Image (cartoon, rainbow, N blue to C red; front, side, top):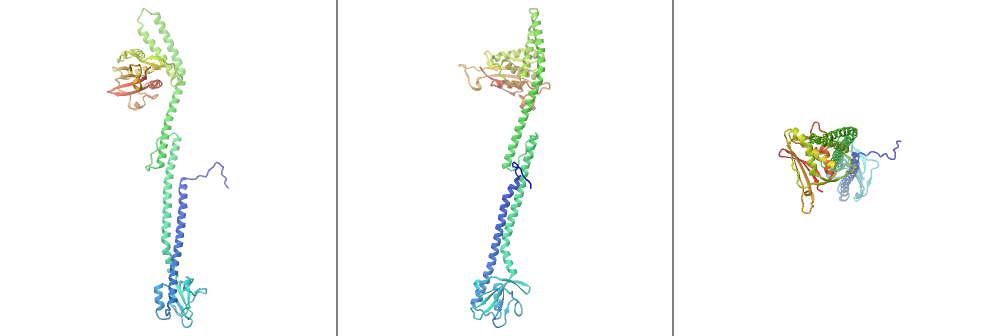
Length: 469
């Protein structure tokens, strides 16, 4: 005998779960049909017996001259039964078409009261089967016996006529219910198997959506849930991949950034030494720009190492206008080289924000540098900034934000990446890495602000909103 473990449950498919109750119901229908057919058969038998009893009572009470010509024949036509009239003295008469005495079953029952008469034993007369019973005509005083022969074929026909509608109806309903249950069970089982295959594909990494069933039912709701789960898993997978790329980037960049920073530090020290020795002899403006560029490069390398680092930053009060002016000065030589018109007017009031100065510089330089590169040869870049002013020094909501807008005349981001412009490693430049705008968004959101972009009148506008101090 096969022994099952305690934790092993017998498999109970959905198709069987649907069919089992229905089969029990169908068995009940069949049993009810059989019982109804049995009852109908008994009722048909009883109706024939009642008719035979009524005929027997008429024979008993009326005193018909059964030995008169045509009397038994007339009674036969009205009752449907044959008769054998056996007189106590004299020849017998019958409607069976047999000359002489009729051979009777040895155990045929002869009743003294017509009310007790029942269809009796089976008798075959002239090759035809009958049900035979006898009635003793005591009231006529002679003690004659009339035997009643009811054709068994007519009896069966009457019973079958009463039974077959019930059997046919019950059988048809049962078979139709079984067929319908099989079809519904197979269809439901197939839909469940489709969901099972889909979940296996999801487990294998295929997160494509599953077509929704046409029928609006619980299976459709479950398919919707599976598709939502697949979509979220696809997002989680993308997040995991991005996180892994960032982690690997951080590991690889550690040693590289260390070497680059050493080289930048050495170059900056060399320029500072040359500028100190040449003080008063030559114009050091170009050297100052080079030093600022090297300082910025060193800061960028540090930001590159800090990408994704959640450690707290040292925040201080920073004048956003002053930082924008520094970034404009750093990028002015590049604009002159590429013939890009860079317009900037520093506001008359201070634009103070609480932030990590290095991060804020990185945000401004990334967005402004992208705009200069996007403008291209002979293009233009305009930097605008608005600072909210309140009489009591306070403001509320979006109206109390510093807004920095950088507008360039370039063609704008490619349509393929327009919706993912601030995602890491998304770039439209062949030599780009796709980290500049991602870092800018990280800094803006870390300060409680936001960065967006739009396309207006064939110009691209990046809008940075930061809470004012």
